Amino acid sequence: MKKLKIYKENGEFVIERVNQFNHATKRLFISEEGLKEGLQSYQMVIDEYELEVSEDLWAFVINFLNSKEFQG
Image (tube, rainbow, N blue to C red; front, side, top):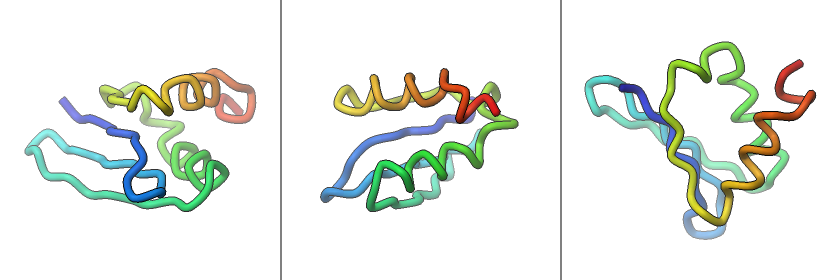
């Protein structure tokens, strides 16, 4: 199963994409707006991923994914 891991590391927001072969790539964002833009890039395929979101970002990410801004 493909995963998106979303968390903070060293003060930056991270989207770590893990593919079905367990190979991971990280994208780092310095702001919440950057994180939103990063998540937006997964809009068409988000249902193909299992989400693992850190506790401190859970509410922010879920609210954004359910927003009209994300749903477009």
